[in-house]
Amino acid sequence: MVATSYSAFSLLRHALTGHRHWPRTWRDPEPKEHYDVVIIGGGGHGLATAYYLATRHGIRNVAVLEKSWLGGGNSGRNTQVSRSNYFYPESGAFYEHSLRLFEGLARELDFNVMFSQRGILSICHSAHEMEIYRRWANAIRMNGIDSRLLSRDEVRQRVPQLNLDCRFPVTGGFIQERGGISRHDAVAWGYARKASAAGVDILQRCEVQGMESSDSRVTAVRTNRGRISADRFALCVAGHSSQLAAMAGLQLPIVTIPLQALVTEPVRPVFDTVMMSARIHVYVSQSDRGEIVIGGGADLYNSYAQRGSLNTQLDTLAALVELLPMFSRLRMMRHWAGACDMAYDVSPIVGKTPVENLYVSTGWGTGGYKAIPAGGDTLAWTIVHDRPHELLRPFQLDRFSSGRLIDEGAASGVAH
Image 1: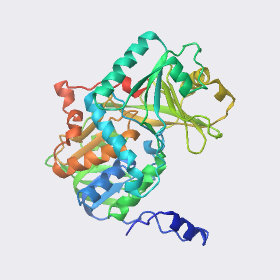
Image 2: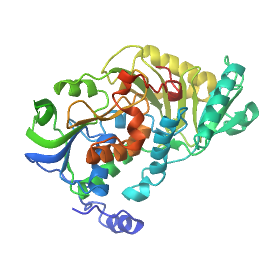
Image 3: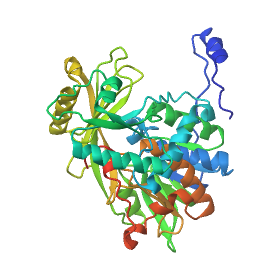
Image 4: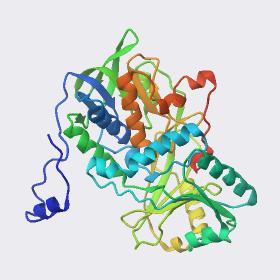
């Protein structure tokens, strides 16, 4: 199967027939008995890993198993932000690689992922917080990543709608101009389309119900569509990594918490950046459909629920209207939560595990979406070479026994 080339000419041609004859975007095959690699999880990370395995490493006998529909988990339950303004060099290098891949992703996938580099603006509310941001911005620049401090007046010019004299007066901030948002569905669909065209079997409605092991290796998975064996397995199941890993006898140092978001009714373009306040736990942007997308802090309890709690919603909305009063008249249309796997140092766990042929991509916390391209690229490399990609060396599972932790809790921009 060759992926259809999307172009202005093809759009005009199919318009003549009412768009009724577009070919299937990706195949819907029956499972094979055996694959070289089985990837559990059909979200952004799983699909990206499959795509890079097939296109960069020539491993095409790959299956992606998804218990529901593609991108129906955390890939479709986020606020679509992409940035690389992390404090530590290890994190900065990884997320910068991901941001650079995002910048060329539409061309590579021949699919418009609607990546809009409108800038990521972090505002602060005190002189003390401004000093913290100064240190953060300087560290980012030393890591070779763009970052710029903004005075109070510069923040006013950037976001004229902002109430600078709110209960927590705004004193300044810093911005990464290359950061922005993209369309989460388009990212998942673009990777799925190209992976399928390269020979990857994408198996939807295929739930893993158990694993078979022998001699410290996983030999097969049992699914509702039959038994599937493979040489290597990868877990890319945000929110349920610990449950799947337990099937292989592996305990992961993560907890799962719900992270909430909500959107308003659509309006004309009125907000052209992504703004966040860590002090009062809110971040906001406007989607390509005109909705105001709002995120806040994570709930303070462990849960696999994909729904929001009233207290967190009220706190988030109160922070929003305090900073941006003009949004107080909008109606909230939808709210939801993503189930976030959170490692103890709020950094990901990506790479090999003590189970010989089992690889894992988990612990992304609130940063999984922005890591999709780099996460897939580096995990595919790790699977092929059976050793950590250079960018993944700091994020191995053994850091919890050695104490080489990377505490990036502050860089998340929300409370954990």
